[in-house]
Length: 459
Ligand code: TYD
Ligand code: MG
Image (cartoon, rainbow, N blue to C red; front, side, top):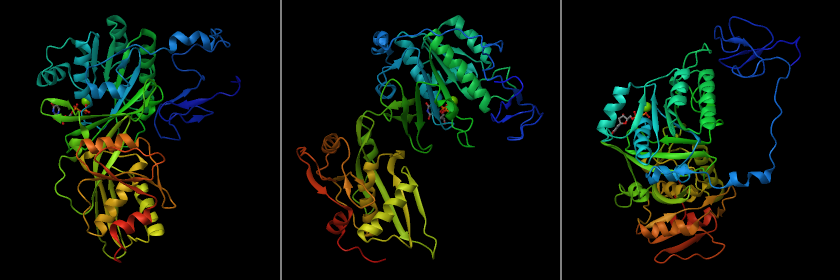
């Protein structure tokens, strides 16, 4: 940067200016403007370029590094699978989720398992006192686990502790409580979260300490929440679920060491989180006799087939203001599907309120759910229950065609395992038959609607 063009930046919102001011014009924060050297605060000084020439490696030299990274399994299959087969040594993981969803509970249980499997584990808590964590450990029956607790939030203290103790795994609960004394903004602000995470991830790589950072999803959106940390870490996991429901889903949204989109299913019990080995059975367990508006979707989450119930409710809307409300699925995808039903299959939902819910607190992101959603919507609109032993899957295009989805056979096998006897699915390129399941191949939405619901009744 030329010497005669000074540059300043706000440590809270990162806005740049050419002159110093007491108050940032962009975000209104006081005393946050600092001279921007173009380098991080802890980086080298400004004397000349002052850098060292980097060491070059040939890609072929990296062969040995490309081998499977060393991992340790927790012995909790649902967690190990989401991590891609266990915790990779010296990796940095972010666990995000709403406050109160069970992140601390999950990590305390995981810490105990990793410690039992031979890792030296330090649990740094900035949110609760060590005594509170101990109490929780007692309630979870983990009081005698060899996990070390540290109640600290100053980054210098945390780094010094980790340097001295040299653990294999450090859990930082949470990144929003950690603060650096060289930055003036309060703990939890973007600059504090970003700088602390940066230092902790550096430490993980430099000292070979696997590090799990907990991040709360903040109400104001994701600004100071886990989002600002996502790009720094190797693996990003989110812990999801409805607070009123006992099911919790651990989802990998980014993983440098394994597949993304893998999920693990847990149940919150009086004694902490329990693994759910057969999620399909759980998600379908509350299904009664077939009712209008209910359709079973044979989905794939990560590498695993999961069956769940899609529920729709359609009711006349008060004059002129029809509502669309969705839980567990994408609202704009529902609007698209309703438009396709109207344009391609001649079924209008105008003047009707439409409610859609994925039972059990699961959030479905796969486009393969389209056909099941369309079936649930039609069944609700026509007040016509679908056969209780039938599953649905297939993506619907804007032209109304029903498209292929991945892993047809796995979906059918899971359905068969759970006692289903028939499936509506896209026309298959190659026949994959699964014993005991009658296949009903669907070419387009219009055909599906007329053959199952006849000519739709005008509303
Ligand atoms: P917690 O792990 O503290 O959430 P987070 O760290 O994500 O903020 O979990 C909080 C909730 O979990 C709390 O409302 C109580 C409930 N819970 C149980 O139901 N059973 C248990 O055994 C434990 C430890 C917590
Ligand atoms: Mg917590």
